[in-house]
Image 1: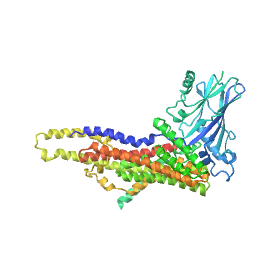
Image 2: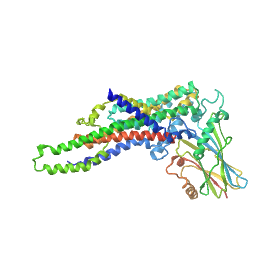
Image 3: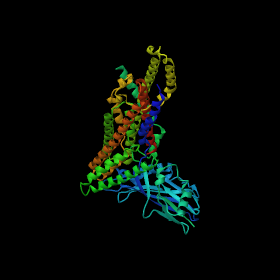
Length: 222
Length: 358
């Protein structure tokens, strides 16, 4: 009797069965939290990139969750009431680089530690929760011809989207600097494609879905 | 009685081991993640065609659910949309890592459960998961007026218990199935030896050569055979006699089934918590409960389908393995042992997801 043949036939069945069993673990999670982003990029008097200020507005489900138990019924949750949660979130954000990748001249800028007062959370009158944080570059850096800003949760638990109307503001920028948003869709035009390549090859960290889905701010300075 | 006590002690030891594993640094990271929602459900991170589609579907459904909760203010008709979207959300959501369906499927592979029982387990686990979310949010918000961090802490304790339970069940199965695998191996060797030594054939002129040839082939092949053999359900083949005493003794254990349901279902899902808190904030807790019940039903359907696929694959493998009883039994025990290891792997994977995710 030949032992080998049934075993050989058994292998595909084994693989099939184990694959089936593993599919759910491999499949990724999906966003539970949606954030609308508005960012300000601040320049120093000598024209260097010095700070990034984020204003993040959360979706209504997370807002309900975050405000639960904070304010008296009928009142808005103030920055004071939010202070513990804001501190907890700011601490978590510090550990993962604030979900913010600022690339100038091919290098990722580093942010200094965030102090109390640099950040707050509050419930807006429309009941959406807002999170604000000021990030200061450790070393203000000359913008060069262009630089990019990306806000994304690589694990895609949080879906960051730039605001449609007012996504990005340049504060005290050298004359001629302009900002644009590159949405995750394929970009039109060869120049943009080139820009994308040069910028983002460094950002493509494996198959990180959150990065793939993220919009990027591109600031061009003459 | 004595045997049961020993088992219980072993189970307690394994549970403790699971807890120790669960208290690993990976889990400690959980508190660090910003803007998290309890339940230990987080990013998988890898994107792909089907995965991307699943993500997109769930994102849209979440918004539709939120819109329907709002619409309820103007009329009760929106409840049907809410239930429908909740159900669809559950079907898609069960394909993510946050649910116990992989545990159920592997448990079924590892423990000779019949299909019907597996589907019952799937539904019970999903129902428990929904009920846990409702109880958690109901108690936390209505009774304690808890804040988000407090709800997160509670949900994360449940997630920790769930992961530990899954790991403990996996380790327990690994031990029992490992023992069964050894028994099957021994039986297989004994069977081969008996065949080779059967006196009826000793004076047949062809026998010695064929016998020794087969024996050599077996010796060469068996380690691989044991290592690769898959899933199987001896009972499903109809003609298989239970050679393995542990298979006879195992039977259907309600204790094992209840433990599996508890482990797989005791972790509330983040999405359900969000829907419930949101509905409560809108003064529509009942609608939130209806949506979560629909979500659980959707999850149960996907889990049940997976259980069906697992059992189907097992039977297919068993038919392919066909041959004499001791070999089929060996294949069966090998597969069950692998499936038991898978349960441990799932428990660890869930723990890591909980640790790195939210």
